[in-house]
Image (tube, rainbow, N blue to C red; front, top):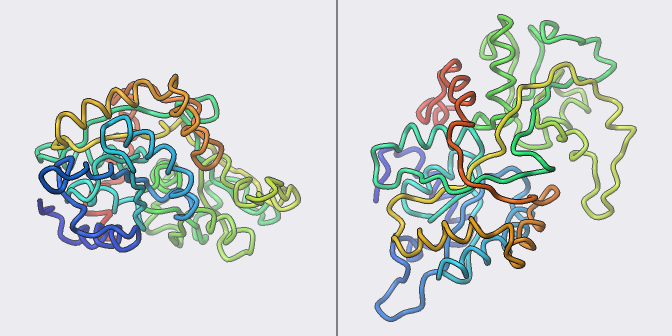
Length: 317
């Protein structure tokens, strides 16, 4: 099925190229040909880490969901952008996906009246919590001590669809009278590159999730953190609590697969294979998954409305 958002289909195409999936894999049926083995379950993941790390870390999760839903050999797909996942869902390139808070809110809003509208299935606990916080940071030797001091400065935002990297910090700036589009020199740098940009004095300030600075300076092989580099930063603001994210499925997914997928997620925290899969997820693993609660995302909706963010505006940036 075609998405009405034609620019976003380019992102979906990028997903296919990046992940090695052909158009032959697409469709909303559990198998490609009559009598053939079921198509592997296609699981989309927002790009919150390096592609290879996400694909490797989420493969056990995808394998578990694929096996439990009758679609074994699950495949993990990572789009170049957060918005790309929404296009992939809308164009039937993937069956289900883990969305960050803003992507989920926009998907519910924009695709509500389409056959592929997202069905919320489960939410993850991460580091013992259903929520996390974002931070706004500067170099400790910058002389910048408050949000007001950022006026006229260069600021490293995350992806425009990032909740902690853009939505919440931009909302905080707007709340004190600083227009994030006009009153600061905004640059969009995804992931840990924003932290590195501030460290290397290529930007005056930046925004990320609460452990983003430590993650940027932690060796993934030794798990050792360079504390001297972490100490070079000053956190000048912390956001309100942000929900971790939502795992969703397309509404037009065939009913047997959808029912089994729902059951698999409900049991993942007690199933041995499922528990092991959660532990393998990048950046420390997920503790467990709990039933979906859409209302926890209401504060995200309010902030998106304040900044006039929707699929069209994000696609244009």
